[in-house]
Length: 117
Image (cartoon, rainbow, N blue to C red; front, side):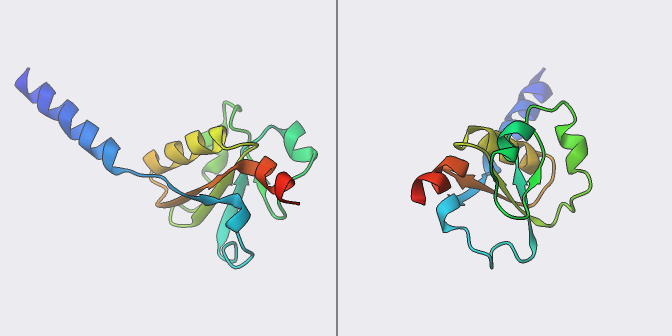
């Protein structure tokens, strides 16, 4: 029983040490994307209404979300955005916990870009 307690404590420390990186979507530059992957986690319908150039649409709500990511190298820089920031934050956390090493959540989402223009 004591070992289970230590295991739970170790898992908690491991999870709490994994922090998701983030930056405002309005600060994203073409140079940031030169050797990176840009993922739009909105629905296909939202994506069709407008998206960032070269963004790959992988629907957060799709049950195959993680399977669709398998083609992306875990060492690649991955920028993730959605409509306002909720889904991308969840997706970024999931990617980090799945071994992707450089995931950046784009805060504010696509709506922040629309407001900026």
